[in-house]
Length: 344
Ligand code: SAH
Image 1 (spheres, rainbow, N blue to C red):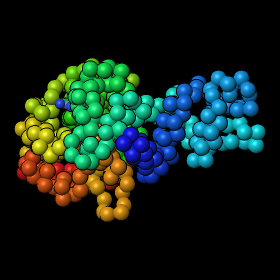
Image 2 (image 1 turned 135 degrees about the horizontal axis):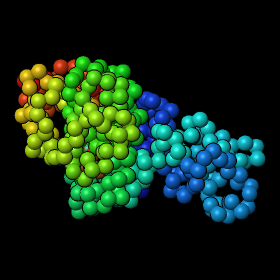
Image 3 (image 1 turned 90 degrees about the horizontal axis):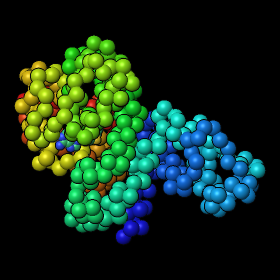
């Protein structure tokens, strides 16, 4: 079934790429993925590829022109009458020296272990089990812990996604009203850094697994907010830092089945005060025949992490099981809603 898996994977990429906001930021993903697997010298500054140059063609193989032609048809390159290709404004995101370079995402989506999981899509569809576990023998977190390169790529991809989403998220929710935000499973801190840069009076706690937290310092220092952040390593299934007025869980609960989510929510519930607010940033699955972002992301969660995306009633029920009450949902981007809840 690899072909089914691959076409679903590509469809997923295409959907992530070409729908939703910020549209031009997402349009870059698929192209860069393709460009990366072709081994193109992307990221070496501004460049033009002249495929009529025999030497160059020989070096990069005859398929390059087909690849670039396809990418030009979706606006990432421009092909001129001499069949020379140059990057468009959107295509600039393909460069590794772009501040919001899609390079880490491309390497994450293209990683061998991710493809092996997708190749087992049918197993997940038939059994409901996580394809990654079936294909790799361990879950993705364990796999990444054992393979530092894959982990570094994943962490970098999450940083890129967080940075790309920070503007819409800050517009959707006023984080300036909190004094202390705990970012649970906050990765290497890119989101917390974005929030704290915008709100100079807010302090933060970054909480994640020890081997992830170990790489947070440069991200926090570069953003100039390290002095306002406490970094805590731990396991969100057992205990999380107590007493803050906001608890942020971005793209955490969609990684897990309901029973695991309830364990995470209970750990948070033990840490909150009556005045704390829980801020979940995740997709809220839209109505039938709409919202491909959430629905394909749901498949990705099924296949890789072993989680799922949820509808509003499902969020309400899950939160109630975790002893929280859903208060409000605000949309930041199609698959990024702010789901606000309070202790019940
Ligand atoms: N919130 C970040 C990262 C999301 S990826 C963002 O929005 O970009 C999920 C994160 O959960 C990863 O950083 C991973 O290291 C963390 N994680 C997974 N299992 C964990 C556990 N048991 N305890 C704490 N963090 C965990």
